[in-house]
Image (tube, rainbow, N blue to C red; front, side, top):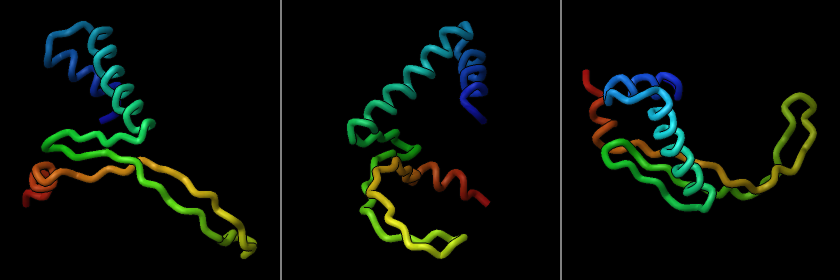
Length: 92
């Protein structure tokens, strides 16, 4: 499922116009993105949580040439799956 599919399914399930559904889904993701940019944690109970993890710089190696190179420090969003989702997915 992609964002477009989510918008369509949300509109169908809630009986909303496509434009209204798109507005709500876009607003949800925008708020989530803005919180992560600020360094805040985003938690959706039963689903999982998103946070920003800081990685220190290091000396890496170019796999083609073998040449050493500096890799700058960076911040990346990470997702941790919630217990309830993990259990639902792992049903056998």
